[in-house]
Image 1 (cartoon, rainbow, N blue to C red):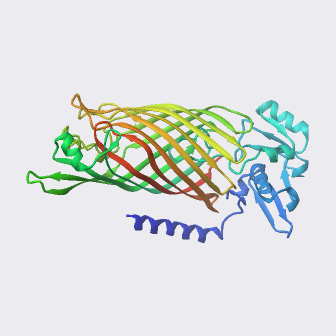
Image 2 (cartoon, rainbow, N blue to C red):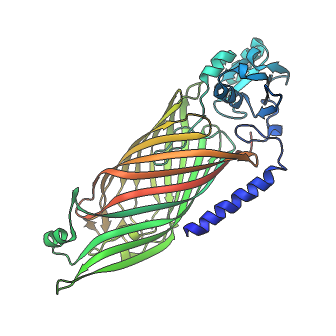
Length: 442
């Protein structure tokens, strides 16, 4: 499976590289087509006379910041929003944080005269900046995308991120509550003949994130997983053998709507409301819901429509982003009288963006999951609490086809885990994803 998706990724990159030669003129930084953003585009001429263009002032300022100063270039020209007049970037007046987001975020729009900027702000809001102030206000990335913690920063209207990737998780440490135990200890305490030994889950996943408006975004995610549970079976004679149980299929479809309640003019502080819905596209099998064996981890789906919500916050300072999430998911009883436990989550993420192509970060989240119920009986060895630390990173490696391609990855391990009565502790959870992002409308 990994080889199959690796070959698919290589094929996509080869096609993109081939198409790039005949592509329309695009933004030096993000890859968006310049002819779609003539009203905001900037023209940068290097010291050696090479001309490069950006879709707007935000990316122009990022290139200047990366070079150290505007003196690193022969000239930098921007366009007046109202008239299209070409003006030196250092002489322009800029408006940040208006209701209009014509290119990137933060939305920084250039004007030739203070009067034009004032008239624009009277209609659309925002704050006026000089060139030096605009350069200080910019960050290497307008937003970062956490892995296990949601961002409060929605993409601008018409921006779509399409991602395809692979995830893998292994659970192989037998626990009773929060204590590690051996199979022999487990058998002695519980008197059970079967003990969980190892669970593996892996498969491809697809994600789509779309900006419905400049404040409202929809994210969807679904996966196709192969799950394997290995159990230690003790015979009356005292001998042991491994029993392997498998299940595979697509998971439930996860839908998240994020609505930005408030942000500052500088696009550096956000408070956002999140609504979460899961649709029962994954199969629920009662064979994995028996009160004696109880292997809910092998289920592909919950078998029910579930609803949740939460609050998100994001803060940028200099080259760092901080994201936070407080959320709750209510899992309803399905038609087979099985109910997964409700899940409460608190998380935070710290991301470092040394330049506009790279992000490195750490994410910490704590989750409490209530015990499951089946036919009115509490499933004791289900639910639990976990605190997980995840290392994340992303690299935007190619601008093409009117957008850009990013590869990202994550690797997480629990700092603490309590599995209630008994169960397996997560050894690691890892993922890798290739994402294409492009703005399709303004």
